[in-house]
Length: 199
Image 1 (tube, one colour):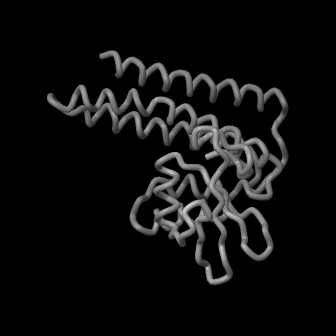
Image 2 (image 1 turned 90 degrees about the horizontal axis):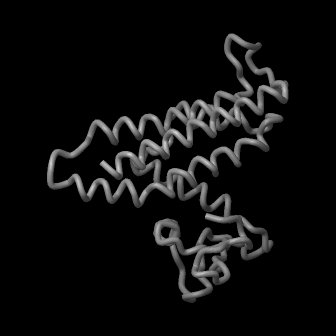
């Protein structure tokens, strides 16, 4: 989902405004009705954009509410985020490389999302025969490994190459090499999915 005020979903319309009151109730101003986190989660899945404002202060709290939705989904057993990934993510808060991480994660997610239709099409074509569990299991592991490698590349907690807890930035040349390496991995993943779709 796009940042508040810059969305291009909803067919180009402005995001729906959700107000959160002190009693934690969420109010959808478009439908004039109260909604739950489950309702907002479904809106995200349907690509319906919205922004959430604190009814009293007027502050934009969209990020906090989306994070709360993820916590709720994880608590239901929908475990999408590996523990190692969560630990690495937490480690970036306050680190001087924190500014670079969002663009990496956004790029990886855009690539994965862009290939969803190809993956679904491949599933439908292969469903009548032997289902390629191995291929998609391997692809899933590669996706996770790719993102984790990107996290480690700029980790504020280097292993043998530095002291634990070090937050010094690597040389600029190292950063550029890391960016190029991640781009090559993303391109390789996309090519693999395209080959599966053609097979």
